[in-house]
Image 1 (cartoon, rainbow, N blue to C red):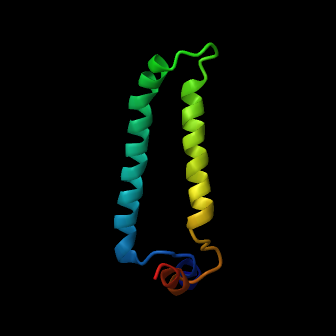
Image 2: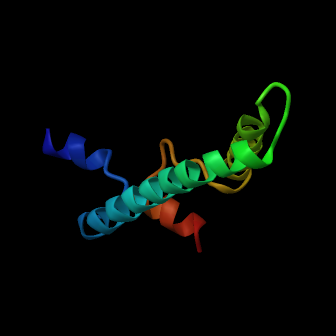
Length: 88
């Protein structure tokens, strides 16, 4: 069973803590940015339907999805060494 668990580990043990901390930090920062800008956008964008704020967030999300689809390599079914070599 231990070899099965090891097969699905992507990051080495010494990097997992750092990677998890960075991911959590980015998640909290993104949530903070959305929370702080939502009211500002609502006040500045005076539209009849009140959809301007959601349009801005939708366009931002679409750009992020396009970035990930174009520039983040697929890692499914690849070993750690193959993933590391793709970043070199």
